[in-house]
Amino acid sequence: MAFFTADICDEHSDKSAVLAPGYRNFGGAEKCRGEIITIKLDRNNSDLISLLRDEDGSGKVVVVDVDQAYYAVVGENLMKFAHQNHYSGIVINGYVRDTLQIEDIPVALFALGTCPRKYIPVTAGERDAVLGFGGVEFRPGDYLYADRDGVIVCPQRLD
Figure (tube, rainbow, N blue to C red):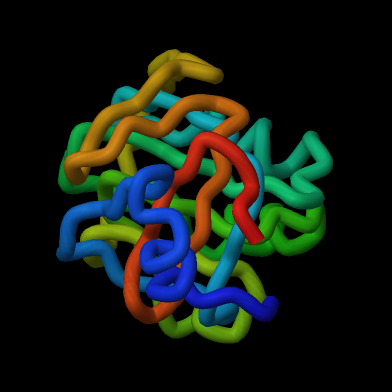
């Protein structure tokens, strides 16, 4: 992928929003870009499992908000689903686990940190919601770019 978030911000400062610091990449791909799919979860990741396992993610990045609840939302199995269905990346306002196993799966995975436990009781999620965290608003259909320098969101593809 021949893009750099810094260059996009320089060329399109009026069209790019930058996610606040604190999110780091735990996945095996150093960067990702794609059309945003959003999902709001209440700690349990059942709806995210269905999305990553059952839907083609070509050209897509999934943005997940769990309000920073201290439970792992993505681990090895979900990353395998994301890779099998061609998702470019996942950005989580929350935590991940199985970091040793996922570091070689070629999907970017930006999150706040790690947590070894997951939330077991099934709770419903909300797909295609407008999400707001880290000073950025994520709308389904917007475009996301992420690399070592950060995560940016734009109303359309800019590269």
